[in-house]
Amino acid sequence: MAQAPDGSGTAPVKITNSATSVTSGLGVTHKLVSAAIAFGNVLRGTFGPNGLDKMLYKTNGEAAVTNDGAKIVAELLVKHPAAKAFVSLAESQENACGDGVTGCIILASELMSEAGRLLDRGLHPLILVKGYQMALSEVMKVIDSRSKAVSNKLVQVSRTALVGRSTEGAMEHLAGIISDAVNLIPDSDFERVRMVKSGEGTPESSKLIKGIIIQKGLALERMPRKLSASKVLVLSCPIELENTKVSSEIEISTPEQYEAFIDAEEKQIQSLIDKVKQSGAQVVFSAEAIDQRALHSFADSGIFALGGIERPIAEDVAMACSAKLCDHLDDSSNSLGQISSLTHKRLENTDGVDERIILEVGEEAGIVTILVGGTDGLAAEEIIRGLYDSLRSTCLAKEDDSILLGGGSLHMASSLKVREIAEECSGRERLSMEAFARALEAIPSALATNTGEDKIDALLELRALHRGGQFDAGITSMGKPGQIDDVWLPSYTIEHAISAACESACSLLRVDQVISARGD
Image 1 (cartoon, helix red, strand yellow):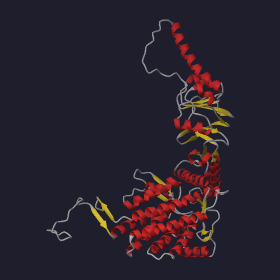
Image 2: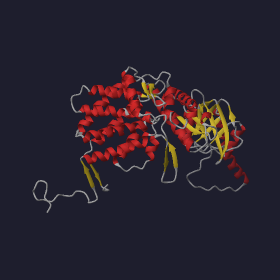
Image 3: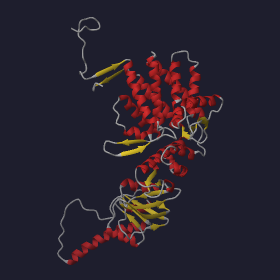
Image 4: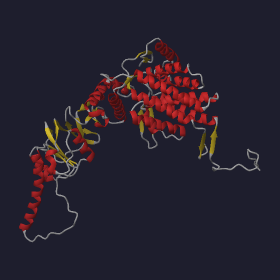
């Protein structure tokens, strides 16, 4: 009979099935730390302006080439619980800031690595967590003291987010487009910017449309193809006779009765047409159908009309030209918007003919569109992904009016500050604060390593520069420590990345047992 630990002679009680494994003590640490390090190593090589790409080959046979941390993490089919925690961390960073995922994961991985060494030496997890939180509060103070107003640096913020993407040849041009778009849209709302693949040219031929592009063919070939300044009516109601919900039969005994019936129908349609024309609109969009007779009448009058567009597109058109979405023709006169021009274009490609209606609104546009040059395919998708991240960063910088130097400058300054404060700590928390400081240096270290430089030499030289008073020093695009003056990031992006990485590491460090129902 198995003896109980207390000597009572009672056999131990099993509360899980035989396949369940329970790992405790240092075994837990090794599991979590190993997974964190492995996850960080996946992304480390993609970090910075000289980071390389990853090719992702999915189970369905599709392939993607990218160095975007959020994209890579989203495609990984992870099973380990610590890795899943890092996936949640990446999603949190992406949703909050749209950028900075790779740096966030690298820092969290390094925090776990440093924690593993201290736990092996006998440091209690709660003391380690407390030291990390003390260090984090000092880093937040450094971020506040080093943050600067955006001023005229929106282009630099946009360019920084584009660095390392497949847009190197057109970076200045695209950065200018992003900053112009952010300056145009109200309230720095990135959701007011649309991106459309041009299907021709190169990224250098991309341009900003101060309005919206509708990808839909004409319902009638006789429609005007080009209009100048015009009033726009956007409808959520049809311009046709509505079918009755109750079935009925009408007996017609004479030709005159049939003609009267047809005339009544024509009068109803004409009444709807007249209401549209009397509103003064030269451009009409409807989320519902438009009768063919109405389309011909509008074309004869030089009015552009297009029905059957999706409601979200109709709402976008209304927002772009400051119109009201009209649900009844009686209110059409009070719902008009304004555009500066309308142009219909046709583009032939391998899939057939692509038709576009370009609505230019001007400086008062509620929605703007970036027409991204280049052919379709993986490259175009990666360019749009990079532009979207740049857009999010630029909007965030303008909204908060707070930016920080990149290139690992903030991380090195924070590391030195945490080391300085740790010297004044007499408890064991000092060990974890110093570990936090070393983890912060993983960012400039990765930047130097990805350019082929020796990370130890780069870190030593960068520390010397900061201690010598060059507080804006960081890792340049050449991988050498030096003055950083054109790499700017939103303060909130770095703040969120560091705090989220610390919180994730601390939550994992509080785990004292891993219980796996699969037995692994």
